[in-house]
Each structure stands twice: as C-alpha cells, then as structure tokens.
Amino acid sequence: MDDSHLAMSPSPTCIQRDADLWFPDGNVVLEASGYGFRVYQGLLARDSPFFADLFSLPQPSHAELLEGCPVVHLTDFYEDLRILLRVQLGSGRSSDRDSRLLDGTRIDFPTTDALIRLGRKYQIDGLYNDALDVLKTFLSAQYGSWYEKLPYLEWGRYALDPIAAVNLARLTDTLSILPVAMYLCCQLRTEDLLRGTTYSDGTSQQLSLDDLRRCVDARVFLTREKDAAFERIFDLSASDSCSDSNSCRERLEYRMAIYKKQVTDVTAGWNISGPWLPYVWLKNCSSERGYGEPPLCSHCMALLESQHRDVCTKMWGDLPRYFDLEVSE
Ligand SMILES: [Zn+2]
Image (cartoon, rainbow, N blue to C red; front, side):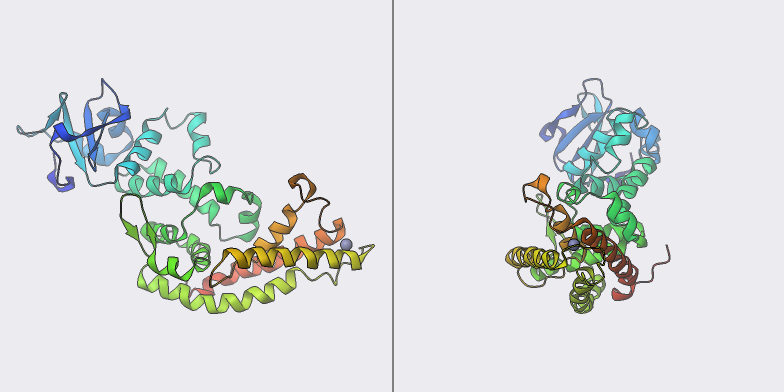
C-alpha cells in the first residue's frame, strides 16, 4: 500500500478496537489516533476512489495484519473517522434513514464538519455534497430562505462553530457561505475570535490572519448598523390598523428592556447580535412558551415581521461589502 498516507503507526497489538465499527467479518482495519475500525474494503471502494485505488495496490510482503486484516494507518482524528464510517457504512446512502440524517434536521455541526473534510479527502462525493448542502442551509446568503428554513431553536441543536465554518468555506471554495459565517464570527467574544476553537483532542483552529482582519474591520460597521437596524425594525409609527397603539408601544418597550438586559448579561464585550435576534425573541414570547399573552396585537406584529424582513434582507445583501468579499454566487 502507498506509504504516503500513513501516520506514525502504533503496532497492531496496541490498537484499541472501536466498540461499534468492528465487524468480525470485516476485511480491513483502518487506524486513526490509536483506534481501529474493522470494516469492509468493498463498501469503502464503492464510494471512495481514494480507497478503491489504495485497495487495488498489491500488498507488500511485510504488510501489517491484525486478526488477518491489513491495517491502514490514517492521520485523521478517530472521532471524525468514526462519524464518516458510521454514515458511510450505516445503512446504504439511498435509504430514507440516511436522507433524513443529512437533511439538516438530524445532523449537528461537528458531523457536518467531519463529513465535509473527510468526504473531500477521501473523495466520497455523495456525502461531501450532502453535508455541504446542510451547511449552506445554515449559512444561506438569502435572508428569506435562511429565516424560513431554520426554526430559531435549531441553532442550539446544530451547535455551529463559525470559525470552523469560515475555514470550511475556504477549504471547499464555497464563497457563498462566507458572509454569514463571518457575520457569526463577529458575534463571538473578542477573546474567542482571536484564540479560535479548541477541540477535545487538544488541537485548535483559528481564522487566517486575512479573515480575522476582515472580521475585526467589519465589527465597526456592524456595530453602527445594528443600532440603526434595531430602530427601523421596532418602529411602530406605521401601524395604522392598531386599535390601541399606546398599549402596544408600552408593551414593546417593556419587552425590549428585558431583551436588552438579557443580552447585556450574557455577552461580555462586543455585542452585535441581531438584528433578527431581538425580533425572533419577541415573536417567541407567546403564550405557549409561558410568557402570557402575545406581546403585541396582530397588526403590530405583522408590521414588525415585514420591517424585520426588509432590514435583514438589506443587511444580508450588504454583508459581502462589510467583509470586503467578492461573492458572485
Ligand atoms: Zn398594536
């Protein structure tokens, strides 16, 4: 086998067998950071030209064997490899179960991240493209589709890391997702933006210096823009059909005071969150969440809905300019 992909390899006897992905009739052991996965050459070769090439090479006479299987040492983090193998070997990619898995409502960002990086490296195009589509949904350059496709609570579940997302956009040359990914980077605390993300295996990643510069510069514009956007979204002066505008205005002020206090309490330093956040927060303050009556009358809520869409659509359109990006997609 081609030695160029091999990491410094633990001897086969030291390999820790993965609890799930160790099939007794598997015919190859993939090893990554000390963990072994006993899987099937044929299934890997079916979906991956990389593995198809690797397995087509004649085995050298000194090949390492574990339980009779050739051992392939990979340089990946084992959790990433486990994610890839689980999805790839799971139950056949064309089944309903897998198409749901990759529809964006099941998988989280760490899974998306691993599938994109390893799917690209091992040329597993189907998984790579499906995972990239999930990321594009979360970072859509069109505000309308971004807002409609993603229930607010999905964000907590998905756990997107904006720094890793920017780097994925660079790695895959998917420029359309850069503006929103960078916008989310700008909402990190300064320390987190500069230090980057640290992972459980001890590795970390930062933005490139050039992308960091784009974010730091853009925060000045975004801070200014945020206050103006806030005013435009929550302006009730055009609510002609409201039957009790004083009451709606008072209730809005009351809610916004709560919102501002909550946001100030949880963010140290820069806060450019929104401008969709305060609106979505207000919209969620309805009776089924235990907040009592809907915050404003239906006419006023409809007005805010349309004002928030106008403001955010314009802001989404302006993001590439703030970040000094040329986005043609
Ligand atoms: Zn009203």
